[in-house]
Image 1 (cartoon, rainbow over the protein chains, first blue to last red):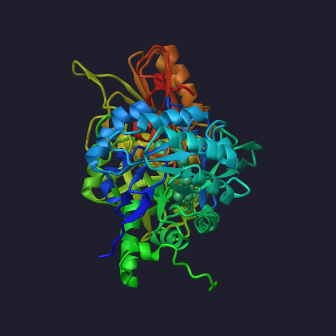
Image 2 (tube, rainbow over the protein chains, first blue to last red; image 1 turned 90 degrees about the vertical axis):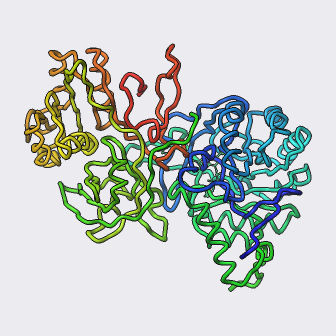
Length: 307
Length: 281
Ligand SMILES: Cc1cc2nc3c(=O)[nH]c(=O)nc-3n(C[C@H](O)[C@H](O)[C@H](O)COP(=O)(O)O)c2cc1C
Ligand code: FES
């Protein structure tokens, strides 16, 4: 038996370090027919806004080499419908629920945080300051350390829930943003969101995606994600959650070595709905074979000298 | 919204027990499955198929309509159109395919009013035949009558009128078939929607099930609006997940509440078959 528990924010202890990435796990219920979602460290919901949102028109997804581009546009049912229609079922299923939030402006984020403060069945908030697919989807907060810090401070004021700030890789210095939001009161960081990309239909001479550009995810982005997690985890003292191209336990364990306290599984869940559960089992198995009794001993144990 | 979907879902690796070339770049794979899988199959439902590859390229699974099934196998028809389908087409008998499904909702049941079956027009364009054929094969395999059922089938050329031989077996059950090709190499010369428009003129009671390229479905929808007939379109939007979590496949539709409001529907879980009047192209 390996002790897989990790603490991703003060007082928030997860039974294992595997979470699901926002926008790839629906509202959780969709996965219930495939495995017991209570077995995960936690689930992170699709990004929620104050009001329901319809998303982008036209083609929203296209596959690229070892990855995919998406331009969903943060379509979601809105916070109220989530609380009345989805949360009760998630609680019944026994899942640890982390709500991913976004807004047009700072006040929206604060209002969402205030609305969710004290709601039973919600363990933490993940603040999306990094979606590349909507003009007002937070990206303007995600690229400027001062704006990011101001936003997080406002959310911090509005709630006592643990706060995880989700960072964009589409910046010149991710460490500067990371330090700024930790300073402003974020209890943990998650990274990375998708990398901004584009796909072109050569014969029609047109962009493929309805939104022209989209967010790249999947194995194609793993090296970038790993590098950023490594740099950020080395620079801040709060827990870091690694995201980007994780499809199996080996990928997940590499992020833990690089300093991530937990990981989120994204695109892999589209391919095999059971991915996150398989990765939990895979991590346990690997550590057991290595004779490692506690996952926390493995986290950040990367040796500095290259192979 | 409430409640968990109660369809039986399967995730498994299936052995290819037969592979057949139907036309240039078009193959039929017969995959091994359990009896429970076949019980959950239904005309118009689909599966997500992938190749178990450690390189994750291609990455996502691809949707394919269930074409035919029987106790311990099911068949899909795959046209080589891109990286995902190309790799699936290269697999040989004895190889393995990752299967997720059956997914989605199929075609509605044949309507009978006071014992009278109303005519059913099945309209297939190109690869849309794979989905439409599932309705006919399912009747054929359960020895169900196909009286008052008409298949209007169009393709680019005679060579691409795949499955025609097997579908002809259903003529014994009452099915009537009309073909049309873009180049006139079989049946009339033209588009399948021309047959539909002509046949609807003297058939106001007919219901329509259609599957094919978007341009064809748009045209079917327009023809139905003129005639006032009830119809269903099977959409083939791009999909990343196939089970309602990525929101990549959505289609704009008229809202259930009426009053002209619009909303988005997930083609994978709320479709792929939609009432024609709901779809907004
Ligand atoms: C279809 C899709 C929708 C997404 N929606 C959201 C979202 O609503 N909020 C968010 O913070 N991240 C969203 N993401 C980003 C993922 O949570 C994750 O950061 C990214 O996909 C990288 O991880 P992966 O390579 O494991 O998929 C989305 C990603 C995809 C592919
Ligand atoms: S294909 Fe993912 S929601 Fe339909």
